[in-house]
Image (cartoon, rainbow, N blue to C red):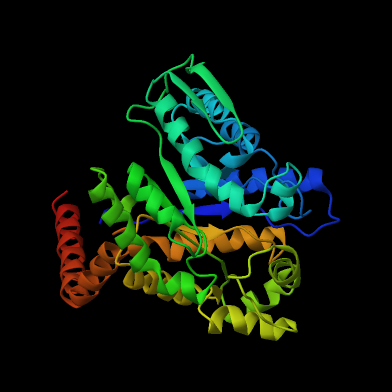
Length: 387
């Protein structure tokens, strides 16, 4: 495996009633902060109805974020392609590919909120049925093909992109997976990456990690595709501080809304969180292995746990949330990049080894230093005596 990459998955999940203009601005500021810290990528969701996940167009958000950043890659996490004409999805991504100079990534899925699809007359079953044929059209268009086809929702006649992608090879394309094997199957069939959004939010998701990658490899082999674990991204929630006590205090700010969202708003029965008060909620996150509210040491252990369970993956995405206020949230990302990421990127051990080597020989070298001072002092005195 190459160095593990790190990023964020920003749905986002904001508390209803806050200033949405400010929420957008702070989300953009957070991406700027992550770019300066050296994070590899950031993904942004598409949602339309629940009042918490405010980004209706991840493509628009990416365009704004790209203008404020220099290196971080920016992805749709995910584009609900059942909601769109696949021709326009491909067209918008190629435009972003040029505008970001190759920093864009396409994440696809069926759409996560039933209240979204209901407004356009689609059921959750239909959005999943639409996912594969629309993805097939998008991939054919990005490959330069002319497509004539009747999908469940759209009629394409000699459809062809007017621009070739900026990226060569093509930008990353990844399929969302929660608990079912659907995302893994499509990732393997088309040789794409996989975005395991429910990797830690459910026991089933965690337990199925290795199984899901087996599905990817099996389907890839059956369809003559090549896949790599470097294209596999896992999502999990973290909030870390200098001490566990400080981390606990930080999340008192907003963790109740996050729990309320998953318990009473989002229709994700497989994401079963539990807790009737702040302490129970915090203890549930840590005790159930969903994520970490604590220290860098605990965060390192959680990432290692995921590496061991999965057999290896390419990117660890920190789930965006408002557990803590904005400043504490930025601080958490900073501590993570400073004290957690280096352990999985080959950057931590060399400096530790160097410090240990220097410590082991310090006494001898210190004596040599003192001897050098004595010699040069004597030499100076001799020079003065003969001046």
